[in-house]
Image 1 (cartoon, rainbow, N blue to C red):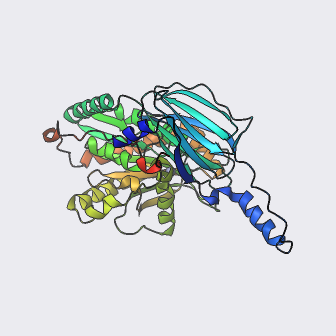
Image 2: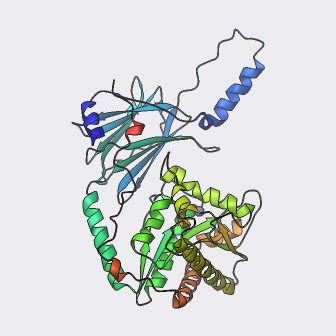
Length: 436
Ligand SMILES: [Zn+2]
């Protein structure tokens, strides 16, 4: 709240934000400059030219239930600052000295959170101006570019009506908890800016996982007494911790996270099913894979997000040991159904420290359906027939697990359900400097 007051006072004035994007993002350009510098070190007097102006190249918009995320691509790393205007309810993101690419497409936007969108070059640089429905401080952070990618500025704008959405969610939870015999939470991996692994034909993991998850939900819901909850239902991002907290709110019987594998260098192939390892991963490859999947939160949750603190306190919790034991049974049940389909190689049930599986109470598994970097498996993952087949196999595994799984005593907890936390903070004072 105090931040809001501060932001209001700062209205109209520039809030100086000295958040520089990492230099790694400069990639080839900076590396090239460094090489040139070395070569010409004999001719020292020759002055270095200024670095090329950053170019605002593209803008992606992801509309989620609680917030809208905008991602501005820059050709290279650059500093930026925010200028709020409370009267006009706008925020300007200013990238000094930057120019606008002719290819930058700024389609009109009015999705309930963001009410207007405009961007142009000024004498100072590139200026992106957002109108917001409610005067919140947006969360803004920079992301270093990955290899071959430009630097990014990420803006999260909160959608008004969070209190009503929380109330509606509490009602949904209470209804489900008091009526459903079994509750299964399905988690389509990645989403929004976190695209996940990318296939040779530019197939995004986030799209395949959502397609399979929807089919899996359809399969399971055709059975009486089973209620399914999806952690996301569209192309937006959800932080890893929020994903398993959905399962905890619903006191779910099982949590199934859907992913696609990807191997660097080798082709790789087949299906593997993971459950949480409380100590170390089954093998090096499993650890590397878990690190890669956990890295999604670098984009989802932004800087400063930690995924490991929860686990520390519950390592020796008996409940956790019990749910990990159940998770292994669930993983075996799912993989044995996939094996009986004989379409893909089985790579076995494995363990690793996936952040999304760290619920201490809900049995949870992560299915690496197939290798998206392998051209023949990518083709399968794009195929709706294969997606359906995979969904049916996973569903049969879940059903056979539920036949013998302990029942969750939910009734006594109705009405004591924790409110749905907002995955996107309404303000992040740490990101904003002092008004000058
Ligand atoms: Zn994944």
